[in-house]
Image (cartoon, rainbow, N blue to C red; front, side, top):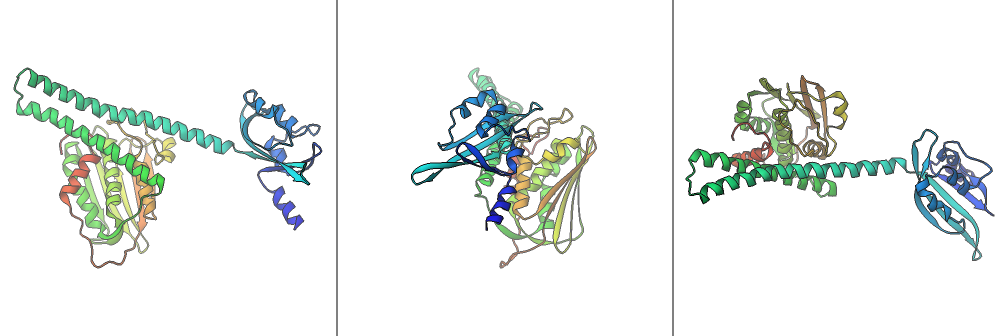
Length: 383
């Protein structure tokens, strides 16, 4: 038993040190690793820490005593001017109501600290982005209302074209705000673990084809074309209809947003085997730089590209695509050639659930409203 415990302790990443009479009587191999093999064997634990600890944290260790409990994080400086974050926990060993030694645990928590810093920076960046995203449509709505009020106050009658123009701005930017609110709400559900799949059997071919047909006017007005192709005429599969619709609409709206100024093309292809169904969305737009592809599904990520015709975006949409596909126990991949094309490939299980009859999802008016929301940051054209 003792040999097994020794073997386990010597292979832990955390350093464990046993102190008796203010001297080290046992230490695990990781003790040297924590300090990058720069230990001074003539010094105790506190002495070695004080040699490398950052000046801003020296006061943390100065007051440390072996006979007292201790639980703190601090930063140590390395020879190459980089640093590590260390978590130190110390607990005295009490025997016969007196201190008979101390157990110290040292753990390298640099990755954890850096992850927290990155998350905080991402949150701050998101708050900055989302503030701008709300501010822009609100300003446009407010300005339009001001102009209409000015006309009314001057008893200057508005032509139908004038009213249509500014009410259209109010309408479109209201949808933009609704899209932001919906995305934040959906993202919060995912983060809290409260989002679930509501699977229904649906003819996926008809379902996706209907979505493509529903945006034909937007595609045409933006000087683009869309092509739909499939290897089978009908294919019943269990999906969450609302989430799958959001997935497809998001990818299609991105194809329009990140189009080139010249004539654009979007192709949607469905092919399958006995295990999986693949939905491929490809466009000939501005593409994604190779160094950005790995982060494209990360939350709050926006690819700032001067070639993009549309600059807006909260950085939540593709993150939700990733989450929704994973809820379906599927996967989503992206490939791209910068300034040439982008291709998203969604892969979901080819399965059905037991239910009395096939659901025919054809709520045209409801879908039109969803399209107005999803495509609200694409300015060219009307719905």
